Image (cartoon, rainbow, N blue to C red; front, top):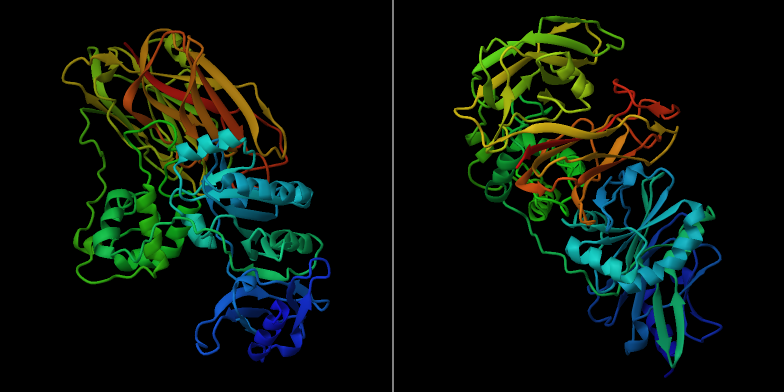
Amino acid sequence: MSLFRRLLLALLPGASVWAQSLSPAVDPICGLPGFRLTARFPDEVYELRAGDDLGAPGVWETLMRIAPPPEGQLWFDPDAPARGHRFYRAQPAPEVPQLPLENFALIDQHGVRHELFREGDASVFVLVFTDNPALAFTWTAIKPLQKSYESHGVRFWLVNPVDSRESLVATCAALGVETPVLHDRAQLVSRTFGGQAVMQAVVLDRNTSEILYRGPISDRSTVQGRTVEQAYLNDALNRHTRGTPVVVQEMRTRTRELALPVLGTPDYARDIAPLLQARCVNCHRPGDIATWSMTNHAAVAAQATAIRRSVLGGHMPPWHADPAFGRFANDASLSPEETARLIAWIDAGAPLGTGLDPLAANQPPTPEHWPLGTPDLILRIPNQSLPAHGEIPYRYLLVKNPVPTNVWLRAATVRPGNREVVHHSLVFSASNAADFLQVMGGLGGFFAGYVPGSDPVEFPAGTGKLLKAGSYLVFQMHYTPNGRATTDRTEIGLYFAAQPPQRELVTTAAYDTEFSIPPGARDHEVTAETVVPQDSLLYEMSPHMHYRGARMRFEALYPDGTAETLINIPGYEFAWQTLFRLAEPKRIPAGTRIRITGGFDNSTDNPWNPDPLRTVLFGEQTSDEMLIGYLNLAAE
């Protein structure tokens, strides 16, 4: 019996639901037998299922979801030639609720951050999942599609959820891969969008929040030396960009599965509550800076969707350093395993499980007025009256140092009197006007400071700062009105060292003030450099930009001609201006140039952009911009 005859006989018993819409057909070129799918009801979506044994009717494999057009869609089952017989049935597909697309942010092989909701020049995104062994085949397969649909607002991203970043970067470099390969280190994007196999594609329409297609890039069938390729991804993109409905919406992927870890359902008391206590409760507690508190399971479960959204989008925990560069003592990020465990628990419904609730049984302590303990000396600025509205120029307020002798400090903590209106405060130590002019309003460094997201910490071990007798502390106060007339009295807490430190800590900076950011620019790059004059130890780095700041990288350009990335911040957030403390001090030889490279997003895709139509220059107000990379160094 011919293969075509076997398929035809197999078709008829299983086609009762859709008999007049599913008919045998033969490819006119290669003669490969298949089926022509024709819609009787254009708005109906069907599932096509297949099985090898009518005697086991419960075993039917779902092959595709399809909305066949009136003109018909010729389709071939790639598995049919290898089977003795094959049975098919079609039925209306269960309705899938349309939910908003999940935003996500991942870093590619170049250390560039890609966020779904901030890629405004593209409306359709094609995620193609891969691993290192399949990368060459995957990239070869998508290159012609990428070229064909680039002008239609289609963006291609490869996603690798299984290999290390180091091996991913090396493989991309060896193959010369130009398409962004996103490192899905916690498998969040793969699990969210159903990326389970190599060369599996998922097409997202950001404008309508639809998943247009999920399945293989293409399928090939060969019978008696004749081959036909079914280009599902190309067909989906072609139809969508022409404004016609996508026919094959989902297709079973037959390629090798990705080696994703099996997670199961984590236990709340054993796995989740301790994680939240270690990583989150310090901010998410009554009286602290978070907008809600993790006081018990019920409170966390009520916010589970928001937690998932924040973690997937890369906004929580608030740690923005690329894990590929540097190791930091104050790293607040979740490990990939911790992230996957937390999201798996949320996806399972955030169950309480059995036993006591560790969050309810161990309530966090109330935040301390002075987290480092009571200071040895507290100095305050005069009470400041602030208007309800308008732009307030920086205020510079002098406070006399009352200590009669020089004193070394182990810490200096600036505490805003009114957090609602204090945007930031930098404090300078000046014995005379020349001292104050030297710091140039903060461009040349500062003595102590408060910025959004900063944590009070002691100076690095073995270091300290010198407060000179007879000096003044000059407070630079940046206020942002909140709609109500109010007051502020910011203060600084000084902690004396028991003995002089081994090294004096100095804050300096690389900066640029001459840039001009054009209206609408998505990634306007600006660089600045400073030279380290003597052999030094680098302890800490901190980027400073305003609302249009999107990224910053610190590099050391050594006198011997080599270069090193010290830290990469691919997703800068103005609300979290972290001081990144190296796990081990970095030796910086004299003559080393520290280069900072910043990228500014002045487009409408930047949700914090005050005015995308404006040319932006350097300025003190948050509606202006800055590019400053602070360095905390000590001479060896």
